Image 1 (cartoon, rainbow, N blue to C red):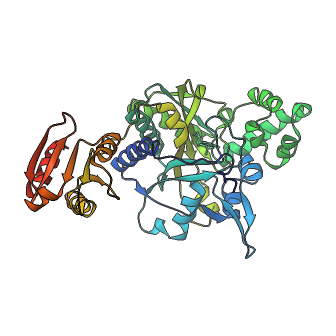
Image 2 (cartoon, rainbow, N blue to C red; image 1 turned 60 degrees about the vertical axis):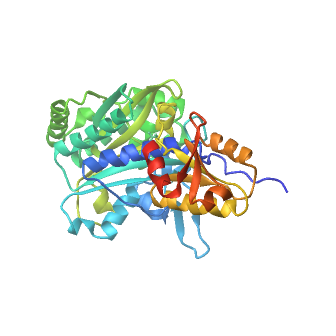
Length: 419
Ligand code: AMP
């Protein structure tokens, strides 16, 4: 039979790699926990309409990259391409707004986009994110940006740059849209077919087209920052002041574009330098989306959030990230009933919280010692017949190869002392 392989752009994470994932995930959980964020888990399949409404019809994600299909019952579904729309759907569905004035939610999970696979770009990838729902104040923006930067710092990624911009409110966007359309109309011949269509449907999306010629046009387009309403400009200035107060260095990036329609006011990215990913890589992306909760049927609720890709951060971390694994003890069975005795001892060690590995078939002591060496065991318990008759075991210290016999009642204390 020929072997089956994983789907293109979707990868297995093998046991050698999972400790680094755990390190990343645990660092994230611990850090956001300090700010009071609680985890939410939502399904990977959602109604297609959620993303069409939430992310926006004319975005690349929805138009080109989504895994969308009709199931056998005729429901139109999609694999989630990002986390925010689902979190807000759940927030509205379960009436979380009625439970507390401000909800702080975080998530970690796989996302799906049918992009062209490349270094650091996959079709199934993991994102973690945080959503601060119910706070409109600029200090909330600063707190969540500072939290994202602190997370990178906790990972040991120091060389980062927070970039900040504003898309303004509805009023600002309307004024900007007019100016942008006027600019793009003059450069129409240079735009791709998709962008010509976007020009009338959603001109802002022209700015994040990936086609080279369109990017050249976009780079000279006016910035929305020049069209901010007085209110939006004041909000932006206060976010900056709060970031200065928190001593979070940042730069204003007037040309920043994010690929999703739901953003309003503050948007931000955190860039890191990486040899693996190219000179500059976006590690974290986020912003405010004050209209999304009401777009998805809830009460008007200001919200800000961010997301980051786990694979990209792992590439950045190189080999630095190592989760501490508990040191193991190997229990070797020797002689008649040796395997059973070894399992009994392993169970009592585990009950005391010690990692214990054990044999499954009666093999020579030599091969069991080899196995113990391979798993990096700090010691081996030899459960031999003669010792068992005396109510004891042999303890072999793997660091110096010495062996002693000890009463079985003293074994747990001995192992614990070595952990
Ligand atoms: P976005 O949701 O597009 O703002 O992306 C946020 C982050 O998710 C990016 O900075 C990446 O780290 C990660 N990301 C987005 N798309 C992919 C992908 N196709 N493969 C791997 N990581 C991705």
